[in-house]
Length: 157
Image (cartoon, rainbow, N blue to C red; front, side, top):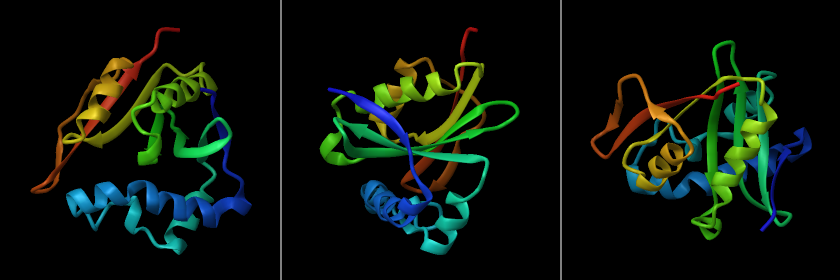
């Protein structure tokens, strides 16, 4: 299985928006988070976000097929992993783990990585902790079904 990260081009913005809706639709249904879920984001807001120069969006390709997407945001104090999703049909095949390794290689000079995820999504928690991420900061209760947990990773240089 060959996994690669490829920058999403501006001309692919509409497809990326539709992909994001599809990629996050399961968690939207499960947690009913209509305020912050990427699956509810309108095209105008998505386009403003997508065109932000501090954000670099990537396709996660598995054998040339779009299996997922993620964003990397280089901040002064960390590289932030955001909007990371792998489509359900590609799940539990190691694609996410490989994608994260590739992402870290893109910013190999950066020491600190950070992200947030849904605490109730145990597969996400398992993946991040297996890759060396550790919880920091206080958890944030979004609604009665969903809590956001914050992770960071200090890489040795």
